[in-house]
Amino acid sequence: MNELGRMAPTRLNLLRAARRLERLGKGAELLRRKREALVGELFRLARPAADARTQIAAAGRRAYPALLDALARQGVTGLRAVGWPARDLMVDIEPGSVWGVVVSRIARRPALVRTLGARGTAPGPTGPATARATTEFEKLAELLLDAAPQEMLIRRLGEALAQTSRQVNTVERRLAPQLRRGMGEVRRALEEREREERLRLRHLLQRHVLVK
Image 1 (cartoon, helix red, strand yellow):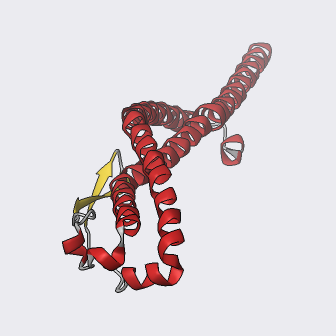
Image 2: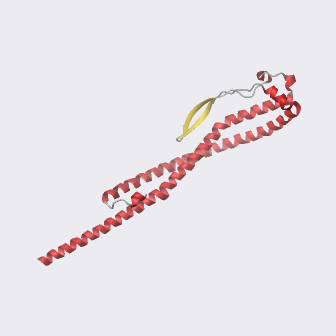
Image 3: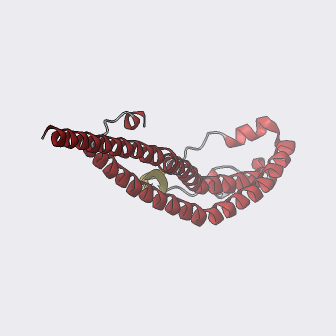
């Protein structure tokens, strides 16, 4: 706001500053409403996200012990042979927007949890431990895939909320106060100029009277 502090003390500049202060007030009000909406959206998403994280944690506690059991029975080489070839997953992603925040969601995805027949592995060589570990990790991957868009949305909403809060603070604590101070300086300069003009006019009138 340095240029406001240096603006010429004229009534036109004072009117311009008043209009700018009014625009700042309206902008701050819009930003406050956006901040409230973002907070409400985050609160709405908080409980489902917490539930999803609880389910992911529980699935992880089931999956990793099952993997250790399968490793103990089949070994790393055996599990690699069972897991070959790698599985490709194709998902359809759609873009979207929430309060101006660009987000994406998974529109369609394949089912991750499969039967032994769908995996193309024979029950005998695979073994129950490997089959159980595979099923548990497919469930875990399914939960992670479903939770990923929501986690991304929460993160971006949090970033947008932080940015909006900074903008509100900038307007309310820096821009608007500096503009008001600049307007106060202009008013004082104009008042001082008016007093000087009145004094000058009074002296001229007195001299005119003396001349007569």
